[in-house]
Image (cartoon, rainbow, N blue to C red):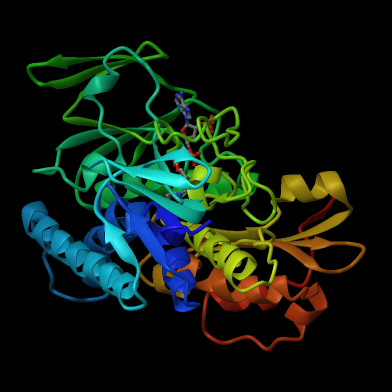
Length: 451
Ligand code: NDP
């Protein structure tokens, strides 16, 4: 049977764009449909604008530090409209690059929604239908907001990037990546920031010691963090959004931002009709090669809810192209994926937490928390944390946790060593770079505990 395309990609985010481009470079005839903006969550309303906001928000504390170092510098108010204009100019530029990169190898782009009709057919919003030998679902995820009374008053991270003015008082709900990052960003921009998290400690799933450390630091920076607290109800009142919390407290904010997780963007795509199996949370179920229950349909990225990170989606997309278009069956590698939470300071990690590791095998824990030189000089009481988890049997370093400025940059390097199977003795025989904070990673000689 002759198909209109070798590959039809639904979704122009990190995974979809990479798969479409690389497949077209093999000579395949490829189309891609995107209903919103090319680049997807990461470029348009996620990692990229978030990181630019992290940069912007860091200057308030940098100015205070500069004064302590002797600079005669005053910082005024933050001009959000000016920043927002520049931010969106930058996003337009990046979107164009994505578009150009797709066009170069000949990917045909449809700027509209596409849904599945059957195992080899997609239907566009304008009514046209196309057949394809393979279909790739790369539709990402979307913010989830629980159904609390008044939830329609809340923003998600999507709206934060578009807000007209900076709120004076904000409540962030949640304790994950997005909640902690936005709490730090808005606090740094001068917004009076509160954060409610329903559990006992933020960043569930991360290393307990690091969670406690980062919670203290962000409170030290001025975030009003309430753990064991959730929103009971919200109402629009004359002076803002009134919030009653589960601990009985009442407070009023100019904006409430829900960062309570994301769900796979799989609804209304015709997946079930085409025979594609979905999991309990709506995630597209795939095998190790990203193939769904329908052999001609594959899925990559957040819609599959494996590890919801841009670089992972890109690797899944590349492995899909190797498997399907280069005749080289390739499984994406989900082992030892490093990541960073862009709080201020950052928390970055790779491998196991102490809690996960000690349940599996005997371990040694090396950990150092200290005031780095730059802070000690100005009597700034913020400590960094460097922590290694070592398997007592193999001597391999199986986890690393860093809280410090630039931790995201550091963990990329440590990640290579750990991925290569470096032992604690390999770290030990590496000569320190002095004077740095990260030299501590090769200088910790005695375990603080074993388990
Ligand atoms: P997370 O899953 O990290 O966190 C969700 C938070 O919301 C948790 O604290 C969770 O609490 C809480 N929550 C969930 N449901 C409810 C509810 N019904 N009521 C109250 N609180 C609730 O999701 P995020 O939205 O922060 O981020 C989504 C994903 O995006 C991340 O998992 C990550 O993969 C990716 N991401 C990565 C970033 C990075 O690499 N820097 C940055 C941003 C996002 P509990 O812990 O109790 O379940």
